[in-house]
Structure formats: structure tokens, C-alpha cells
Length: 347
Image (cartoon, rainbow, N blue to C red; front, side):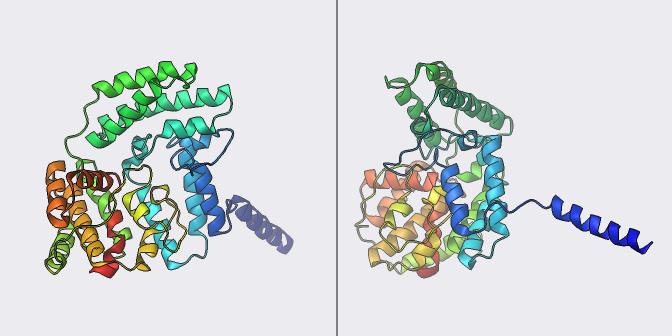
């Protein structure tokens, strides 16, 4: 009897150990490297040379989402720093929200990046299948009242039109590109440009505010805090070049050259923006710039500001040109919440 019990106990232990999924990554660096490789179609380093395209590298497909989720789960089992843990938690929360319906993020020309990875006819077929997938996802999204805003819509439509005018595009992709072009031409984007216009968009935006700012305030509370601080700042030229380079956001460009803190999010250039901002000293005009961007960020994404309203606010606050204001507004629309990376030292 005792032998039977002992055998049963050992068998249970064996089965339990076998049921556990092996931890695929054992360090932050390994996981970051895996995410960089996974997201090469979304954020491809300049002058990088890669051959071959894996199915999991096709953005927001089932294979991509499964791989990304596995990496996040490995990270959650590691001993990480407080800043790293906060970023992992933020990315895991983002999995709940509807970005997967927008398989071609407007921040970057995914098609060009995929073609840079392709090395065979089967790769081109996978890209063609992905273009079809992009359209199916957009069609499914509309059934859930999820639509691109007009800035995202115009960017993606222009990527497709640019590809169709490129003589180097493989013939095997032209048919699918023309189908996607026709769909995008008749596509009607949502009226709002802010996240509040999406189902669960307000909750999604709140998670971004919480992460980038490092504290929890409602958007209304943030506006009150920011406006009080702006009263103490004098309006002066921002004295900051505003470039229109994608996929780099303005905040990524603004912090280039500062002490690096590795991150996990392709939208932040795989840099931890709040941690980098914490160590960056701002000049007086730069403080005003960030406060004005934070104010405009909340205005666009929660309080239904129009693009002209947002531009006028930035021009008034910063005494900048309409061109620079337009570029800042586009950055704020495409990269919600990033400006709040400087909240801790400003408020």
C-alpha cells in the first residue's frame, strides 16, 4: 500500500512538472532581442540587412500575437527592475485593446519593411496573404465600430499608392495591392482622431497615461494640473526642430543622444521613454513644449479636439509655425500619451 502511494505521488509530481510550459527566455536582454526580431516589419533599424521572412513576423497575425504573448509571459516570470516591470505590465494590458484589428500600423511603412526581409517567392506570397489579412481585419473592425482615423487612413493609403508606382514591386503583389487600394479609396475613416472614438479607447488611453506619467490621474485631473503649471510658464519659441520622420515619434527623436535605457515597445524605439526622461534636464522652453504637448494630447484623445483646434493651441502656447504645429499634432495622434514621459519632473 505504501509503495502504491509513493508511486502515485511521484507520478503526480512528474505530470505536474511536464504540464508546465518551459520558460523560453531567461533574461530581459533575451526577451528584448526576441521582440526586436519579431517586430522587424514594424520597426526596422536603418541599414539593417536581413534575409528570409518568418510567418510570425507578419504583424498582428495569429502567429505574431502568439509569439508576442509568449515573450511577455516569460518576462512576467523574471526578476525585473521596477521600471522594466511597469513596462511589461503596460504591454500586457495593451493586449486587451483593439490594436490587433489595425494590422498595418500607420506609424510605419510595413510593406517596405517586409520586402526588405523577403528573399523568396514564398515570402512574397506571405506578404500578399498579409495584405489580404489587413483588409479582412479592417472589415471585421468596422463590425465592432472600430475605424482608422483620417491621419492613419491617409498614411496607409499613401503607402499603398507609393508601392503601386514603384517599378521594383514584385508582380505577385500587384493584384492584392490594387484590391487593397480600391478598398482604402472607398473606406470612410472615423470622424474623431482621438482614441476616445474607439470602443474601449478611453480605457486604452488611460493605461497609456498611467504608464508614461508614472502616476494615476483621470484626463480631467491632468488638464487641471497642466493648466495650473502652464500659468507659471512664459510663452516663448519652442526652439526645437520638429521632424516628420516615421516610425520614430517626436519623443524618441527628442531623447536621442540621451543615456539609453533599453525598452520593449517598438513604438518607443525599444527604449524606455519614462526612464530616459527621468534623467533628462529640460530647458525652460522645453518644459513649456512638453506641457503644451501633454495638454494637446488629452484634448485630442479624450476631449474631442479637432485637428485645427489642436494646432491653434500649440501655436498659441509655443509660438511655433503652422508646419511645426501640424507635425506635432500628427505625432500626438499617432503616439498617444508619450509626452507624459516628462510628467514626473514637470508637475
